[in-house]
Length: 170
Image (cartoon, rainbow, N blue to C red; front, top):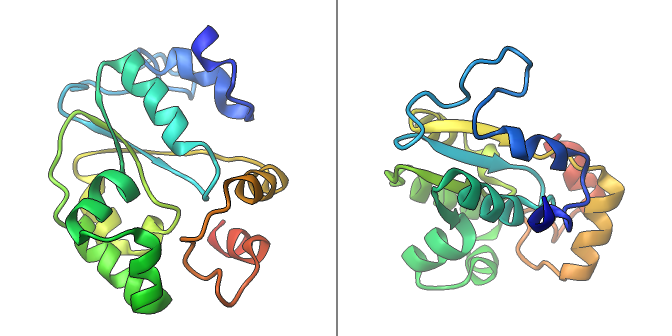
């Protein structure tokens, strides 16, 4: 599929089959009520969540949302990086989680933040409206992508290396 040629992770091959079938080989529909259910993409920063969300949204005819850009920054009226600097790691995680408890959208492919999974109540809330897909990308690839992207909004990066953060979150 030409529009997916730029995806370099090992996960690129299941995307064309996501429309109709589960990836476990059972030939059961992945989403029986696909117009109502959300697909939440999880993974570390630089895993390709936003890129994959755009491809899936087009394939599945769903809306696409990047939580950082299209939800948190809109609701907070400030950048995620500024909010993280203002609140610190713990305060940011709590504020991010509380904001996610307000999420009520349907029929979306959602690119979650790298830290959404660290707030259990918000993850439980989101699980009621969709499924989660974890993008498992090798740490070496994540590190090289993040260096190129110059990401400044990763919870924990003020006190730990990105490699340590990735190891902890896995």
